[in-house]
Length: 271
Image (cartoon, rainbow, N blue to C red; front, top):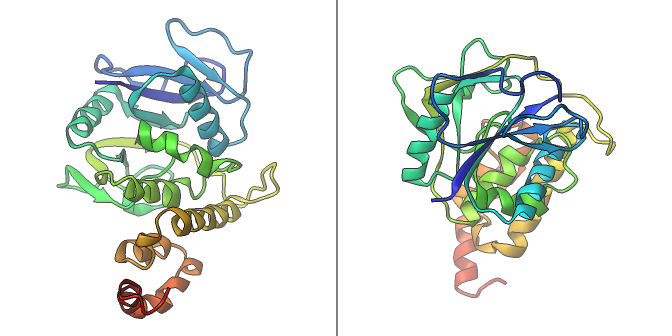
């Protein structure tokens, strides 16, 4: 079975794994991603991916490039922000279950005292694991085959907005992979306020503008590579989620006629 890799973001100073509770022996390989670039102090027996990046989108691109160039094969790749606290035992448990079920991606649930954008990712009492459309980019665990396929689609994305909500669930469907899940049995805590909203990045775009463009790029990919998915119930839930921003609800206007249009295409009535 290919190794699973867990990468923790690091500013190049101090212990990159300070927020990992070391309550068990890791059943995965551990690495660090130094987002300030080269020049960091060495870490004993730990690989460090060092690239000066502005935000998580750029970091994802650099990590994918590094792992692809290594020629290695991985099972899951987890990429945890440097302000996320969780336990080694929790990561072990999630990976053990995901290896059995083959989940496309997964994440721990959020503690109620976390800084957050989406309350639906809070830990649910009485739940062990639940299926979700996507998991947040702060600490996702993603199948390597899906993460590698995301490389060309996320090129130029600085903030990471749209990668979690649009790119990953689209690839999950296109590659016909099993569900994405949240593990309520494993809890993580996001310790710092979210600062991406409203910030203008080097590419001249805000995170919200990047999310819109990432959605457009994914729609173009589907039209070219998977036209059979257009207008399906999955497509509407993905492209215009009711629990997402209202500006994405436009496609819902033609949802009532979509089944008739698909039937007409199958019968050759329309192209």
